[in-house]
Length: 338
Image (cartoon, rainbow, N blue to C red):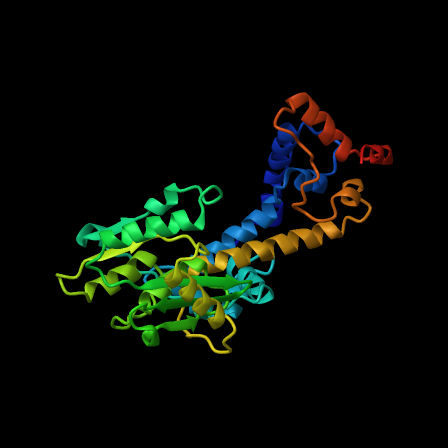
């Protein structure tokens, strides 16, 4: 897996720069890196880096893919020996994974179930509480609606589940109102998504343990497969912090589990690591932008992503173009508009 030579890839850059100038209305003399910062669009080099990250990440979860063994079972020295004049996709990407402190060993294999579980099992999902406007609905109103739903499922056994995340820490919990002593909580691997935490909460409900699989529907499918045919499952969405006791209790359990020193050790979905990749790509781009100390736009936009455009919905194309040309101007006289 060898990338094209750099001079071949650079042939695409003028097309990218031209399109950015058209979109922004910038002059041809505008600095290229100013165009990236003004548009909030990374360079093609950074885009290729992100695509390579995501490719290797997903490939790790697909051991039956023909390219899996080529990438992960071949020594890096063999890749480097292919040619010294051309950059290597695998070697370069693995180096970036190391710099980003992302381990590929925590990624679980991806399993695809067909037909999907929602077509094979009778599952009820009640999201009626989402119809309420949380800003205009009182806690009492939510509680009344919840008790109405509870009566609707009076023949069900209630279990509250929740997932919580604080920075890199992730935890899940399951609370049993009728048997609080059976309640469980666990901390997942750092970097897992809240979606994975919510699924882990379902897995903590006390049914037979299943291997942590990367696909959420597959997880539900494995849990459901163990239920007897007469068991009917219903999912009800409940808003947080509206005074519903069971929901408040499971929220406390999940948050308390964030402080545990040990994790469950289960593998996580490859997609859970994508936010960390985005953060790393942004940091690489920011480092390149910081090297542009003499750039006039860098003086007013030192941090990429800051909303300094002050654009209004009523601004027309002509005004936006004029403001862009002033911001990325190569002369210091532009400073007066800030």
